[in-house]
Image (cartoon, rainbow, N blue to C red):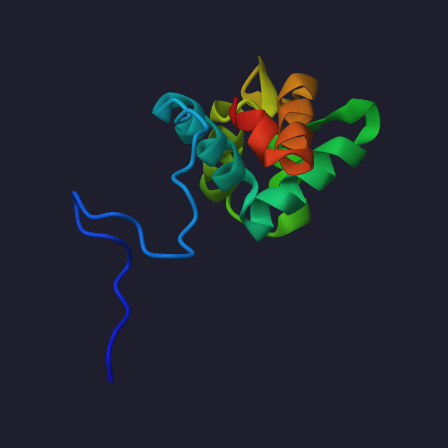
Length: 124
């Protein structure tokens, strides 16, 4: 059995029927890393549950103490997930006394919607 080559060797002409090289400019590495961080921040079932709970809470904000109770998870676990989403720009946080309250960051969520609508457009 012969394994097909992945492409022409350096200096060789492309095989017949091979598409021309892509002409689009390479997207800046920092930009795609930022998009990947945002997508990773929501690509977790617990984080999606947290996001939903915060969005649907009265006033659009929720205290960590209420989130832990609702999810049945320990406070350090919930705080870890919230910290990741806040770092990705999806949540805003405000410390009130000993507790931290979270709300959805509209700009961050708009950016996610833009990525989902047009990943290519989001990269430029």
